[in-house]
Image 1 (cartoon, rainbow, N blue to C red):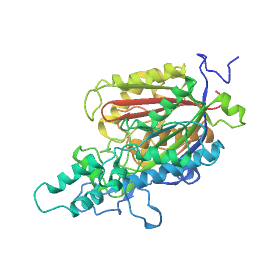
Image 2 (spheres, rainbow, N blue to C red; image 1 turned 45 degrees about the vertical axis):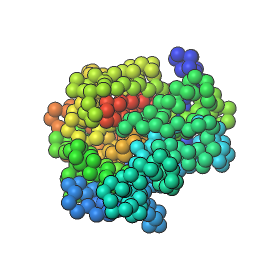
Image 3 (cartoon, rainbow, N blue to C red; image 1 turned 120 degrees about the horizontal axis):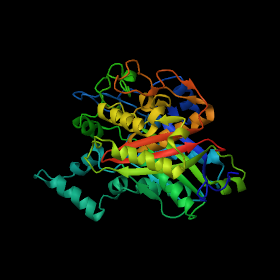
Image 4 (cartoon, rainbow, N blue to C red; image 1 turned 180 degrees about the horizontal axis):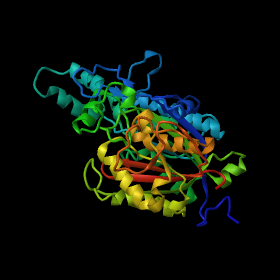
Length: 427
């Protein structure tokens, strides 16, 4: 008989007991889920800053409350807190301000934005280079303490630790667009080693600002299909032309099954396994033969002690870029083999955009909800399938299905790839 507390290799079984979600479709699971299965889009024209002269003028933004000023730091923290609050409340774990486990959080790279730079340069002398010298001085001496706080890499993690009272030093990480999935992988491994019984995993990103838009535009990574905005993100479609940058946060509470059972918590799913593999091929592109992506998927299946025949659904990375979607198809075809045409695949990015650092956590939450609700959200804008991609894409309309297991893919710049195998409870 299969053990509920241990997996097939005698390791503690890791379950999810709480989930939180914030995307351009809404705050919380109750706002997001009905809009996801209805095939709605959260992509709109950018109003946060002027977009005159930019090739891309759309994004999946989350409004700041009550017209408060935007900064990537404060907004990323705000939506992370909201997602974590929702996850902890659903899990019913700990007490306010005292979470009984460590924090693993994925946050965007911290850097000065135009408002902070202007504050530094406003006091600079006219002499050439003076503003830059003041910037270096601020970094060395912390003379500009507020600015230093806003751009310190771990500042969001520190603020979250103070807010939720997680145990020990929080782990702040950035593995590009695989980061959100990395938090779940690292937490799972720590719980398996017996170093904790519960953990809070969060991925957050709110960096829709001019610098971010310009950088990705220079890489020719963004869609320039600005009208209508909701039709821009079209994963696995012949006419796809790039991803749509977006903001979001996802959070999960993970525990050993024994810990959850002891306190009477209801598991929402099982983290069966995770796999990672980097290809070190190019700063932004994946290796053409797909070996790193194939390796990450294969390692995830092996870690979960399942085969590709056990996978009921793929929550694809599906960015809507020409190269990435094709690479994911080739990798899935290799791993799924004869079942490559039969396993339903969807990309949440068609509706909410690419939430970058948060994507792996956001999409893991949606994958878990898919299993719990028995409905697969659609890949919208899939009206003209790419004839070279022969996947069973859940096109345009949600599909009712009994989903017992999901492969959730997350691939990042620099060849950083992390895949999760999630399953329904009981598995």
